[in-house]
Amino acid sequence: DIQMTQSPSSLSASVGDRVTITCRASQSISSYLNWYQQKPGKAPKVLIYAASSLQSGAPSRFSGSGSGTDFTLTISSLQPEDFATYYCQQSHSTPWTFGQGTKVEIK
Amino acid sequence: EEQLVESGGGLVQPGGSLRLSCAASGFTFSSYWMNWVRQGPGKGLVWVSRINTDGSTTTYADSVKGRFTISRDNAKNTLWLQMNSLRAEDTAVYYCARHKKWEVGGNNYFGVDVWGQGTTVTVSS
Image 1 (cartoon, rainbow over the protein chains, first blue to last red):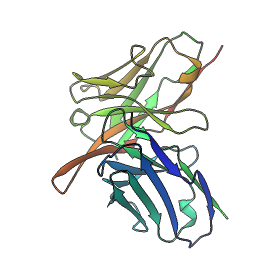
Image 2: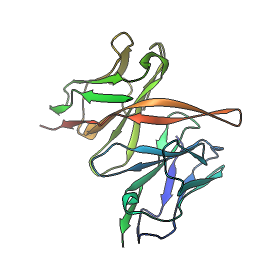
Image 3: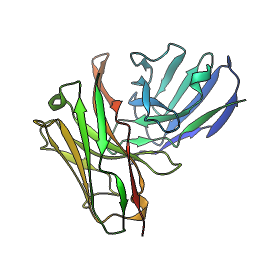
Image 4: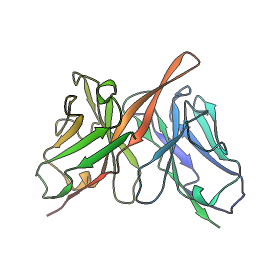
């Protein structure tokens, strides 16, 4: 199975900050990488697919980059509604695997 | 509105069985592969199983293979997950999740674009 490792596991940031979360795959997954946002008690929502494509309806302050084994999710200007946990997920091969999550908290 | 609504969760003893249901509405259910994804208490997301459009092809995580069975009825717009020989480590919120294909630059990419609200399964004596 492909292992997905996110860093950091948690971070504290202020509204307006630029935030970067990284995700590393244990082997090359080309651009088969998605990012999800999950708020407490709610189902996840997809933000980014194919490593860098913005899902319809997702705010443009979210962007993704990377290919191969190293990926990044960037929030250009953190908003109050962005405090949540973010997961990367590879769809290169079955079983799909997720990173352990990055919790973004208010500073 | 595209919607998935799970039901059937509950408290079950180790070794017991449970059948989860997922009712789909607002989209052509028969056109989509479907998945089950689970999340243990305070834990991350784990893919469990997938089924193709007509139910002829199913795939499972190693941790549930031989114990769980995914199935669907396109006439009823319903997805199921039959869970047998349940273990404490199966305790989780189970999400029904629509398999999405995106085309980018001539390539197909996959993920989940619609999730249910989740149903909680607790395995405990």
